[in-house]
Image 1 (tube, rainbow over the protein chains, first blue to last red):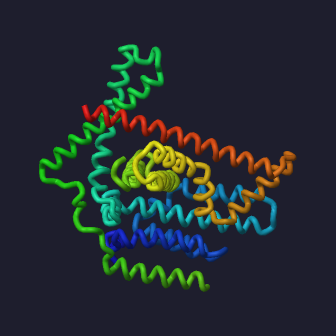
Image 2: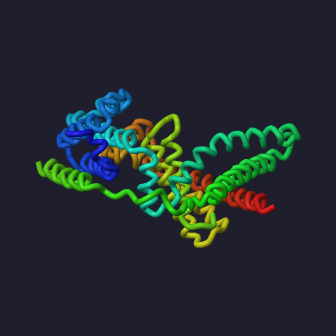
Length: 217
Length: 139
């Protein structure tokens, strides 16, 4: 069997995350144990043991168990255990999804849901971060050197915010104009929308079957 | 924000920037960012056209997510049992301190009012800021 990461598409990974969320919520008591087991297996297959070895995940689950052990009640320790396993399942599935699906793929998926130009917007926003910091520093130093914060501080703060936002928007506008001058249309999207592969569809069918089996068990 | 769905779009962009940041992907903040942007979008949609009232409503609704974020995300992660256990612990603590349960309701109501006022003030200032930026860019 090849690397599931290469065979399974974005929809397969998203389906597994939603499946884990649904099963961890719906499966009562000890039925959460197979859900956690499958989440560990899926994470190990897709991302190696990297996500499973994160000690913070298991520390969080252990802390839930520890806190509930201080609450009096004979069955509450078991309830705490199921809560801890449920939290671990959901957190592991979410971490595996985040670790295996790139931001570019997520942007393409969101573009298919009506957010056209999202990939371009995220790219521009990320590259603008140093520019925004530089603009903020220059505007602050310019106002401070002109005694802008000695009196009327609220007005000065408002002017500083206006200068930062206006400067950043101008720079962003220049980037968009440069892209459009090169016949790039941000709203045309980033290629074809992401569609589920046949393997994704088969995987989803297996997930539904296994989920129903766990709930019926 | 003259275009519809701008607030939602901004929320998704910010969520992706957060995912790309040094802290990495953390479910809680991502859910909060997207939820607050959707609530802001709802506020603007309820107002109809862009207006100061719409911005105040959007700000109030967005900030109103804050006190509900932890219990909601916690109930998703840990289940309804955690919520019931938390209420039980609060009740026991109130009895220990000799407090009436009605005081808790009043404290919650005050907390929500403070959040609504803070969000409304932020929306009010955002309307002024947006107008000033538009005038600056038009020069």
